[in-house]
Image (cartoon, rainbow over all chains, first blue to last red; front, top):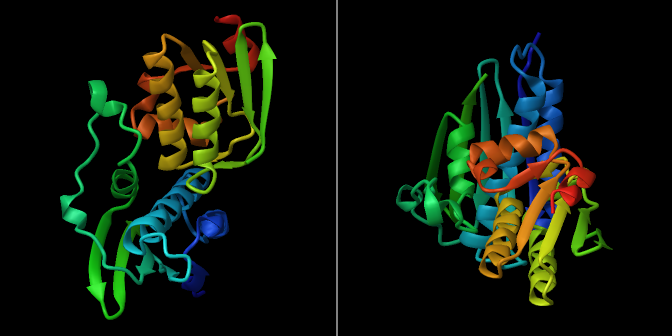
Length: 142
Length: 111
């Protein structure tokens, strides 16, 4: 029996759609066939990762422009899950974003945790330029 | 954002009546907490019982409230943290920053 899932969604560059996309990730995890791990955990992780990646696209890559769009593609194979978030902006240097500090004043930074959260919850994270924008590709082994 | 605010003696109980605390609504909570401290409140409990999901912006709003409290010799405490929300506090080590109580009554009684 085939288990492949491939979903593509396009939403306006607005944070009101975070919950819609987060929930789709969550529901996919809860219904994933043959997954042996903790489903509730995976559901929350996909919700968080999709939310963080979208916020990144909306606020940073697309610079908050409400007329731009964010494309999301979720591909699930037998052994791997791939999340792709496409923006239409100038992009940013993923490698220049360091993990937040965990001691003293650094722990009390109000921002800068999004990419760290994505990196921690996924197995690989790549951001690359494509015609018309960029794509953040996040993979997780199942 | 749906927030219920209630004065309990010297402490203000802020109940977040949303399933998600994320980049879409976190600024409203941040502003609410800033206004309360600005008006001289010395103790705030943020109850997260109804919050099933938090992202880095939601965490940032709470950190902002915590810093605001510290700068004014006031206190901000949390209650009702659900398991998935707790796991986000742990992932970002922020559970070491906040006083977290099981129920809002426990948090209120701690002042």
